[in-house]
Figure 1: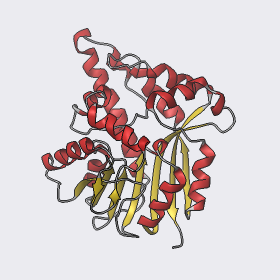
Figure 2: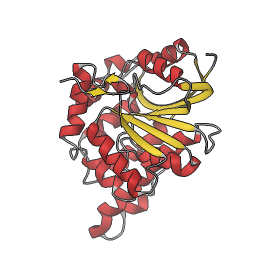
Figure 3: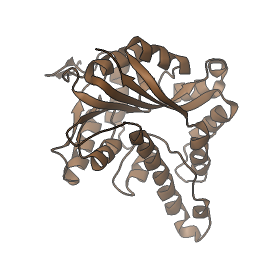
Figure 4: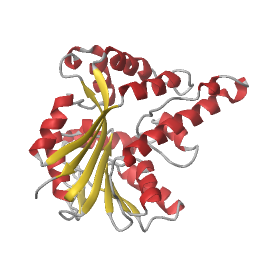
Length: 290
């Protein structure tokens, strides 16, 4: 059944979108890693981490070792979100931001805490909307941070209403040209879009069994690196900074192999990163023209 939103019409527009939404709505606790990490401080993410881990967590009393690893993994995923927010540019309290594919809302809450501005998160999972709005209420910021059951390909928000937009490991579930067309519509002139994503190497990524495995495991469609820049250029979004975070994320994955929360995906990610077929990228781009 197609679900309707009064602002946007149908939210779930394809069989694929319905399957992605159903996964999160029907299996909300299947994501044990991010759920457990979020319990550390109430910031629940759906992305990975960057930075140099404190490997002293691997030493010390055995009975608390796993708790120390969880806290360190969460510190690294918070560091990733902070790095993304660092690149949103000059954001003021009166501005409005949007989190595309907002998940359980961790980065949106961090953005409000940092900038004091309004943040709107959008996701096609009704479970995630309810969970994230509950977190905003618990933190006393529900008047400033709101999560919506909307499709980020067609949000229904007003044109030029956003100072900044970000996506954090969500672009592999959508067509980039459609996505950036909507983001260009939403951004005010000079507004900033920031993306952190895994993307395949244009030369060897298509031949990598590890990249193919990741794609199949998560039910996504990993885009080649070059496709991001083509889609940005087609939609008046000009990159102002590109940072390869591959080397910065490998230590996170290595530490995750030591955790009881390891799921088996760690080896595939490490192989893909280390062989160069897969890259972890930050792109910051400004909206030019109208």
